[in-house]
Length: 75
Image 1 (cartoon, rainbow, N blue to C red):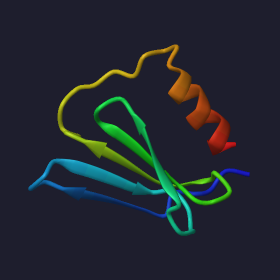
Image 2: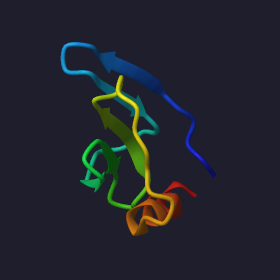
Image 3: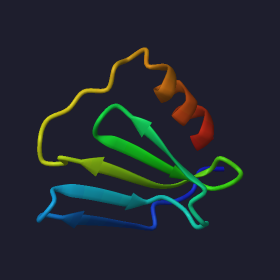
Image 4: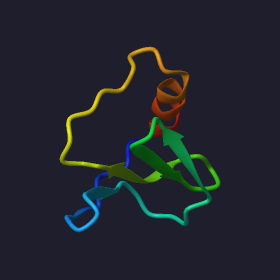
């Protein structure tokens, strides 16, 4: 079951967006490229997503192995 979004914050001083995607303690952070970070708990469930330089356009490679891993963790 997917976790509902809990809260979204944007810090304009550092141009960072953070999405609280679930409850739990952050165990590790998975970096996807230079601008997207996924915080996961010990079970591998996503608890938060941070987007750096959030106001700038960005692309995620369609065939990224890290992206596939993130998709697995989300479900």
